[in-house]
Image (cartoon, rainbow, N blue to C red; front, side):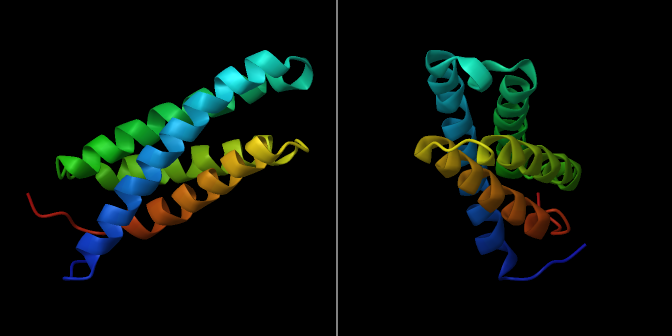
Length: 119
């Protein structure tokens, strides 16, 4: 585990990225339902919902300084990459923005996972 004065900025950035990604993915589910077609494939909707849920959970674990935050951050990064891949395959600006938010969150979670949080 890493611990330093710089880590609080990384954790704050990760919390923000997680909450932003949660919001974007949740909004995109509704966008996809309105679009229909490939946008409503079960695996695509599942990727967005999985991502939204784990992003919110990871943010909450970090906010309360849970010693398990590293695990949720690792799973969050994986879910975000999966969602980014799903959303990135569409030629739709909103879906590409979702993929970007997911990639940003994945990077932030990978950076935050090894940081020791003081209770």
